[in-house]
Image (cartoon, rainbow, N blue to C red; front, side, top):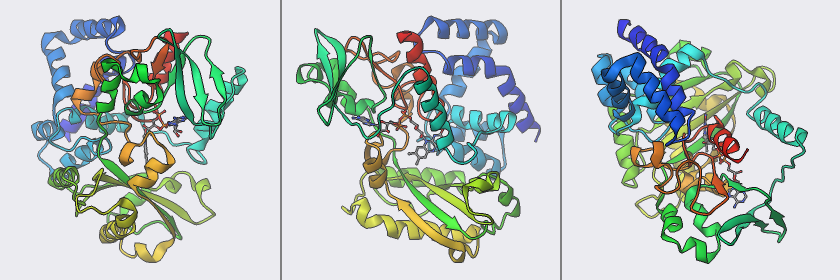
Length: 392
Ligand SMILES: Cc1cc2nc3c(=O)[nH]c(=O)nc-3n(C[C@H](O)[C@H](O)[C@H](O)COP(=O)(O)OP(=O)(O)OC[C@H]3O[C@@H](n4cnc5c(N)ncnc54)[C@H](O)[C@@H]3O)c2cc1C
């Protein structure tokens, strides 16, 4: 407990510098200034500790601070939201921010559903005279004289850009949207090597009552993680990376109706299960369309151990396999929900690939934001704000 409180205090001490870096384009003078301030406040050793936190694996970090396997698992399961298995360098930072930060600052869920946030953003755009077009696929980014000048939609419409084209398409897919003479340039083509993280399956359930979690206090929370332990997470990741279906995947379970009953008819509940992590391609040659429902049954069997009777509470079930996710959104390459792996070689100033940093691309006036760019995945909107401040 004392160590937990010490780490909570540590986050409060580090917050101005950590969030300062996360909110700065990389590399940038703003980031250098933040590091300089950190140096003045924390000293050289303090800055080295910050760097160590940014590079440590979750296992190394939790072994250093805790003895309880449950507390270690609690932190490590947050790393599994991204593609940080317990032994992957860089996982400690996200686990630290989510556990300590979640407790200190709380978490936000949109009342009525996540669409409230999207409606809000669309409102801001239309208020400023902008227009949002849905179902309008961009087939090509138009380039003239080395400058991005607009986009061509799949229906043939051309939209001209007076100042810049800003894309939030997964960087890996960007070369295919550019004219051949651009995509053939080595600096452009290297974005094809941007690596996806491992994939995700979503299971959505309509329930006639909340799960009867054996850990009864879990009924009060929006998020329940089933690791269950650090070694299980490490094995799940290794299995998935080798193309095998993990026997004990990490389950991130959301039960938003605990705090927002408006998401279901009165007295009923919804539950989503994010299955982490799964193979991008299954080694035995089956497609996700073939393997999906059977594997979802396996996951339901695991849940049943923690919430006995769940199967009888289910009114409806929808499974989204990694292939379904990619069909819904081309950015989710092979079902990677992260918009690209977050391992250190693709993070910080290296995101997405060298030469594409600071939200610029090798094509003049073509900017890029979104999960594939710094500071990575999630619905924070920071990369878009960074591009907005560049383009003005
Ligand atoms: C199942 C799942 C659960 C998640 N849970 C969480 C969570 O709990 N918390 C959290 O913070 N984050 C979560 N994330 C991650 C988060 O949703 C993403 O990181 C974030 O939405 C990425 O935003 P983005 O703008 O980069 O791209 P996206 O939100 O993926 O939007 C990209 C858009 O571009 C469109 N597009 C792609 N290609 C083209 C084209 N050629 N022409 C036109 N349009 C195109 C796509 O259709 C899509 O609408 C989750 C992701 C998934 C998949």
